Length: 506
Image (cartoon, rainbow, N blue to C red):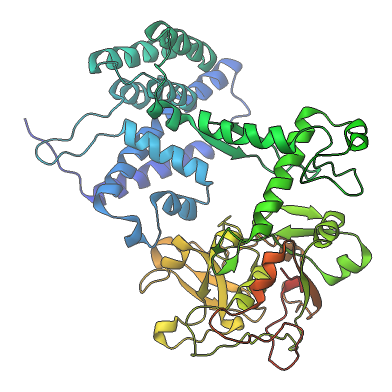
């Protein structure tokens, strides 16, 4: 007995034969097939489609042994798959997870170890179960309590595979849930570790009406904190936005209490807003990427003057212009003019490596968030990146040579990795390394979707835009902490920066 080692050439030849066979099938005439022949052909194709992922899992698992994401020019395997195959991050993570569970595992010595879900891998390789069955099985196995021994875990998986072969995903899910309940009818014993694992607060996607859903599981300590805050600030008459002068300190008047028609849920919502505003105004929250922690909203001067349109926060939340104006009523705001008349020095040349606060505000206005294509990190989570030439290699800290980038993407710009440059429209372009270059877009439009509507070669004219910081602490953002007497933004004595797309500012 011997084992034949297949070379890369052999594999490529077999894949080429598979592609040729597929081309023959795709070119086959089907109009004259009978009903029975059509059903049989569809059954065979379905079985084949169930088997193909098994080969992909093996190849993907082997690639992770032979290389690192950094060698391919990415910060993670998820990014490698997302960029090369133009799939979502969720889909990339699913494929990586299933490859880790269903592909043979490498060992330090000797032959490869069987997959973690060996029975599921065998059933998939034979085309007996589909992707939905696999998802149900791996999620069910993950829910097994930690005290379940290895033999019971393996038997649990085998039973699920046996059920999946003859049933659909719903029936399989029902069987898995029943088995899990019988294994642990009392549930896990409450302890600090289990509570810490389950804690979380999740923000939903912003709805078309602008509202945002929150879902959370709070620890006893977290709710104890909110409980006393709500007892004070969510009491009837407190923090009522309908009052001409809402009560945010002391005790509300009897008239304010009697006129409060809000529900408990609405009062708690308004209490969170009031407490958040108090925290921002306190000046005790420190700095975020070089700026005082404050709400920064970018919008156009035209929208402010017309009282129509929207603004966008540094985190990407869309705010109606009416709310922007109302929020700005109790904030320090200033005009940022993008026609070479801004008051702060936005070109620092080689005098400083770190961008000034005024430059950060301008970059929030222009970029809106991380400039790397497909990155969804908002401006609040970004660093300033020397896009044209790195500072260590002689680059200047000038506004038209800088761009926003999240930490991981900023670090991905290395020799042999990603490179960046500024185009004629003052947009940061990202050029992938050869291993990831599939001709994809060089500019990120996630934070500025209106760019997709502009004609390809239509230059965007400079415009005046207003930057509104919604809390007093934000006025410090225009000051450079390293200078004793920073010039105000409305002082025309210093050169300005480039015009932002669509004339928007932070």
